[in-house]
Length: 347
Image (cartoon, rainbow, N blue to C red; front, side):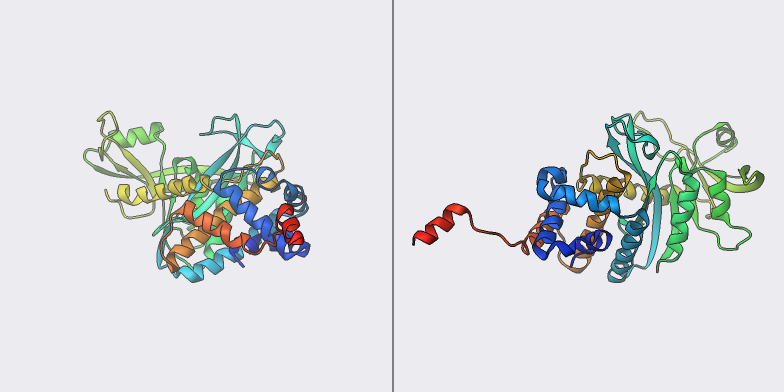
């Protein structure tokens, strides 16, 4: 049984409807991902039952079953030291009933989008580890901390955690430093160029500048002080107009120009999101459970593809999806067309 089959069965318990029905459902889910289509279009007879079962399930069940599959996959890959990244991905939403479950779109053309905070390995290769829904009522720092606590439980040797500029928050930095606990995370955060950072850039005479930056955050009606090391890599590379670029990082790593090239590994998560877009299962539903379920399915497909390529010969992603669809459709019991039955009866 494949990872997708395990996930669907454990989360929804639809195997009771018969082996052939279940195989047809999983095959249709994979086909919808391969063609970037809707379950209602690919298999309208099973879509209502699927969505009903998803609505009766629970967010925590999805995360638990996804975690179990990730742990199985990590045993197959046998990774050494890894670099991980945390970033947000979004799916467009054109409806009007998202309420607090959606957020204002960042990159998509729609006004609203379903957003997820994703934790993935980015070196040696993109490998999704977990995603959490990111709603209007959620605290981004709390979601990231939950993901990092989950990461501690995995059998991985984490060399570095990479963040985009949207995660430059003092509460998160305080957690990453973990001075009281004595278990800091090795991190690099790309820093937005606010007034304080612009001042540091101006005070950097050559290519490299190092500064200690103090900050505060409020938690439980109390202000907490923390600090981080700001590393300025000045004039490294040029933009499309030929203007030299200044790279600014908050980090607890050794200051070096090499931080620029190390940080570029974070872009592998963007590449991973583009791969996920090629396996997106579309839905018109405004139910957050259905959206989260489909999002995890697309991440599971990438996970299966990575495990397959590490064990067998390499397959490009779309071809692998077609092979996966054929594999699951092999268990579907099919009846011959009526015209053929009549010919057989006549014979």
